[in-house]
Amino acid sequence: MAKRIILDTDPGIDDSLAILLALASPEISLEGLSVVHGNSSTEQGTSNALSVLELAKASHIPVYHGCELPLVQPSLLAPETHGDHGIGYAKLPAPLNLPQVQKGSDYLIEKIMSSPGEITLVCIGPLTNLALAIRQEPCIVENVKEVFIMGGAIRHEGNTTPLAEFNTYVDPHAAHIVFHSGMPITLTPLDVTYQCIFLKDDLNRLLKIESPITKFISAATRFYMEFHDEYQKIDGCVINDPLTLALTFMPELCDYQELYVDVDLSGGVSMGNTFADFYKMTKKSANMKVALGVRPRDFMELFLERMEKLAESIA
Ligand code: RIB
Ligand code: CA
Image (cartoon, rainbow, N blue to C red; front, side, top):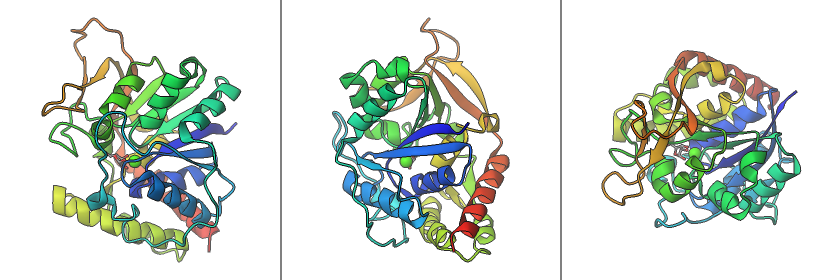
């Protein structure tokens, strides 16, 4: 039975790859996308989500416009990382479809509460939509099946400040609400995603297939690779969000520890930093499962195989 998934996302180059991976994976029934501010504005991200779904002939999947700003922090977008339109050098036609009228956080509540214990939530952007939904309807905590979150840096350096990862830095207050909600969380931090580098050789393998899908992946990731080279001297690009999505149906790609994890709200240099209580000093029980080991090339092989199949199906 396919896993019923809602993707809360800020598309975004690696978000777009995660959407494609979800569509290419028979283990998943992608039921809807809620869009959040982050890599680009919610407006732009909503348009990108609609366009990527149409590119992959999946325009039947509904898209919901979510929060446009963090709960407390000022807005922080990432044009230097994902381009002015959020998908690098890729150019997609303006979407034919419109987003749903319902707001993203209301959609999360309605979907989870109407199918208790059945919905898997995959959050690959700042956690503003989910935090709002928890505050509006706390019962979603015990009615969601499970939550997979891309975010945080536990023993790994930050990618937005020296200590903080983008999703938890952009909205640390939302992350705090979600981390302490009691939801069954699996966290995919930079500790594992930074080992999952999409290389030029990987892209060249996909480009053997003539398809709008491979053209899109090439134009989007070329921008992303230039960013990673210029800012972090990485040869290739880190595809954080597809790894997070893959763990919903292939958890064995990673090794996990049950840990108490918190996020720094002190407002200083470590704002948005996420840290784990490895030695149980706080006496607080674990609030999530954290992926700390990964088999990067097993994941990349899965990703490439699925992208090849998707590309072959869409001429
Ligand atoms: O820090 C990486 C995360 O922030 C990814 O989800 C990326 O898409 C951005 O949202
Ligand atoms: Ca993202």
